[in-house]
Length: 354
Image 1 (tube, rainbow, N blue to C red):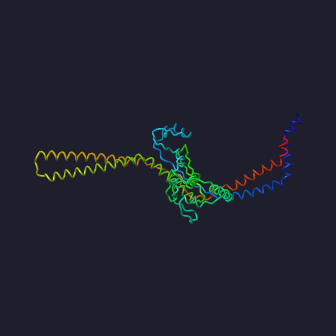
Image 2 (image 1 turned 60 degrees about the horizontal axis):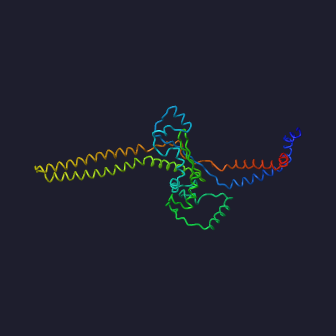
Image 3 (image 1 turned 180 degrees about the vertical axis):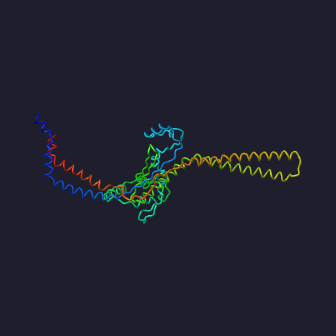
């Protein structure tokens, strides 16, 4: 039993001796790993990240007092569960960035790179001005050749001249849309309802421009959604007001023309017809006044439903690149190579233990 226990005990001095005897192997592996890892990571284009933080107003006053504060710490908003009838809550804003309509609406944003020699749309920038990872170029070329050999049915989608149909995207547009989704992320703080938009691109000016543009498009979309019902009502009452005004002016002209034509008449028929025209004119005037009041109320409702956003952090051009983490990558590869070399050196001892 004692011999069996001794076999299972690891002699650290023996392990250290074997590793020390193979120190030159480690140096060679580290050198090769450092050169290869550095060459690989230097081929990857650098990316920059810019972020924007904003807080939307809440329709419902802070409810629940201490209970509401406690619930918000667990990601539950009692106010949002109450009287607010909006279908799109802040927690659903990240899902909006998966919508083809919203993603394709970003294609036409005008961007300029940091050097100032590229002035184009975001779609053209992603399709024509992206730096490629060098070691991926042969694989990309091979995949493109294979796809060109395979016959496929032509897709009758929209063209790239600005006429984008989110319902029927072409293969190129779908590819760019997937890149946009990958470059843009949105997160919501469940406790404080702070919306953070982050945009990653290969140019630091373009990523800042897109972060601010996405923030503006998000505000525009939410404003349009929140005021849609009120704007429909305002248009409806504006149309009714115009019709009521036209009817009132028409009845006013008829009443005035009749009175001018029968100024000296004292016939009862004249008086009855004049009173009828006057009543019709007054009725049309009351209708016009009521519609005018409803129109003003609807327009005020549009302003009331228009949300306000407080920008906590505006977009700015980043100074340093956000990726790739070159030093961490090389360090990780060296650690991985060290473990692999240790297993190779101690392979006999490892196999004998089993």
